[in-house]
Length: 261
Image (cartoon, rainbow, N blue to C red; front, top):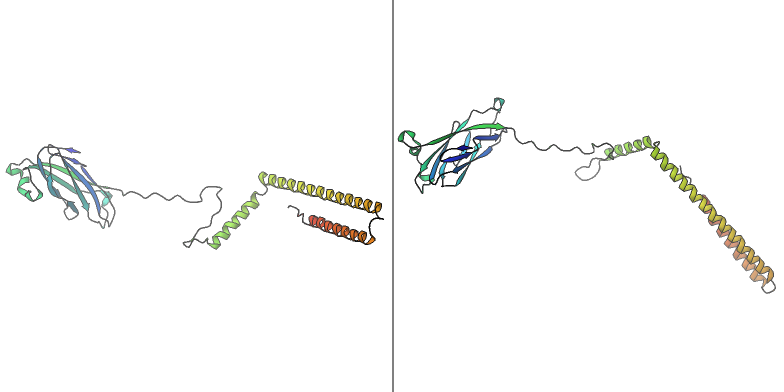
């Protein structure tokens, strides 16, 4: 910051983030330190290259004024990104109530006895801000395979097949690991327990059939004089059908036991 008697200027360097074929702007702020009106004017060594708005004006007492300096689009980058362009800001006290239309070149004439403050500003080129680099997806080890998704939200078939193949190969490689062996052992044990439980239930069911059949036999034998012959035959037929149905059910249980590999 330049601290003169009339104006404070911030900054003293005009920094442009240089980019080819693009207009670039930076700002400058003037602060009036006095209780008087202060007129200013901005000059540059390369007026065709820069546009200053406003390039002249009046700063009211104890107030500020912002200036925008725009560099025209450049076709070539300077050597070593060095710039020799300079700016000169002149300031002088002005009559109270002065406006931009009241500013004349005579007001900044030192030979006429006017006290003119001058501040030189240099131009500096800086690198433009870089966009954040994208984070690659799926780079972490152990992540599940993922196919790329096209614009219409469908997974590419070839990539999906390749991912599936990689997953299968990975599983085949790891199926002999301690974790896989423990899982197979646990499932085998559960399967054996289920088969034992099934066999136990089947044996209990057969025992109950034999028991109740024997009770029916005893009942019929002890009350045969009270039971009509046709009724006995019909009862035996029903019992035979029931036994056949139970045998079919037990047979289906046997063939439905699929071994685990």
